[in-house]
Length: 65
Image (cartoon, rainbow, N blue to C red; front, side, top):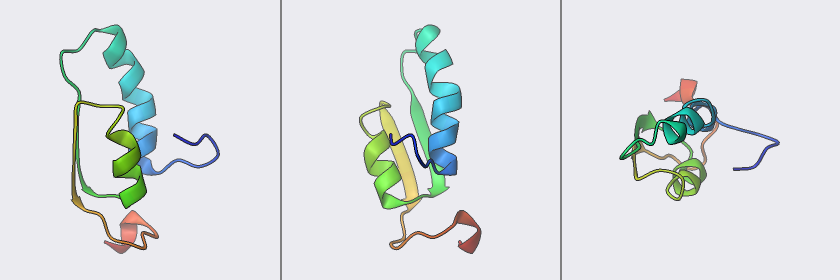
């Protein structure tokens, strides 16, 4: 993930992902109602499963949806 800008979903992963790895979680699944398409794509390699219900493009802000 780029360090210069993170969406809300990316901040959540940064905050919770590392502790889950330390706990040796069997599986990490993220489910969000709306996200930037790029964010969902980038996070696919970081977790076991990601579910993004809506990935509008262009994505400006979650508050618009």
